[in-house]
Amino acid sequence: MFSPTEMRTFELFSGPHITVFLVFLVISFFLIYFRGALRPHRSAIKWTLFCLLVICELSGQIWNVATDQWDVSSLPLQMCSFSAFISIYLFFKRSLRAFSLLYFIGFLPPILSMVTPELFYQFPHFSFLRYFLFHSAIPWAVLYFVVYEGYRLPKKSILTGFLMANLIAVPIFLLNIWLGTNFFYLASPTDAETILSFFGSGILYYINLEVAAIFVFLISYLPMWALLQRKRGMSERG
Image (cartoon, rainbow, N blue to C red; front, top):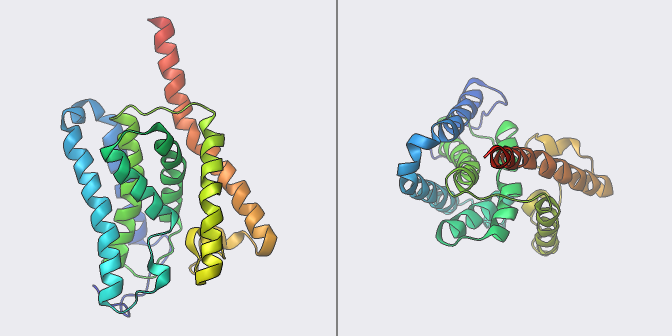
């Protein structure tokens, strides 16, 4: 279960892959649909998510060290780690600016990462379990902030979030050149076959990354737009 050489048989859309993704969807539905019954337990949900994010991040680092796999590319500088750190910060301090970035990089991107994961280990390997738990906890945290903390974003946050993501990407890009890493997948697509594998190479890869980012940001905002429209309609009727 913890061996770095065994169980490297992950298959895209296999039974375990589909099952864990369905579990993610069911729990997400549960958090939204039963929000009224769960609201008195908001603190328990909050700290459960906090613990999941911390444990997943730390356990991944510990596993890499314990199995002699750790190198500079193991640093927690991927987009999902950034999302986890922002979530952890928001659990302690309310910040609309921080949430405007988290919403766009921490909601749909981790879900897409679960659809086509950069993963080599099959269930029930530690890496499999950690990967899906970590990438589930991040959008669950976003849902928590929206549903239970009442965060809302104006339409201009699409541009704000896009600009912030690009500002962060610049030093990450330079760091990749310096360290020979691939944080944010700015140097090349993933090793495993994922959505990024179809983005081409060279300048075309970066153009497709930007276009995909804009598309993802726009799609991500649709649920927020629907919430604001619903609130506006209720205010007009009231």
